[in-house]
Image (cartoon, rainbow, N blue to C red; front, side):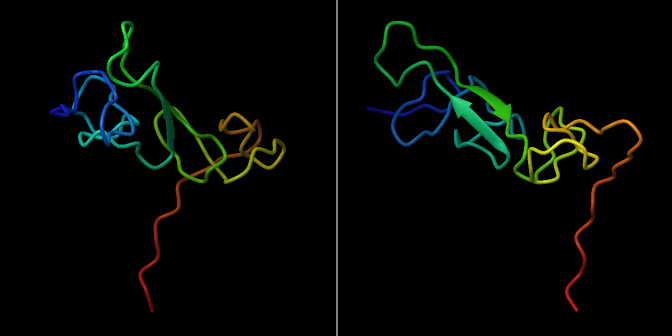
Length: 102
């Protein structure tokens, strides 16, 4: 069986297949789940109702992706970043840039 990434059916060694070959949407152009996301498929290959993978950001993992305004690595509200990864009233957040090694 030949596995084709991007056709919308998760098969073979693919961990997702969202029906496109775009990166940074949760499922990479190589049909693997990208960091900061979780993807689900309705079924593996050879099912009658195959649908593309659905990928969503994982709030609380410390990675700011897609619609997350912040992600402080936890699911606690009251610390500036809510349990839904939105900036809380009275706080402002900016992404941290990596520091060069010493």
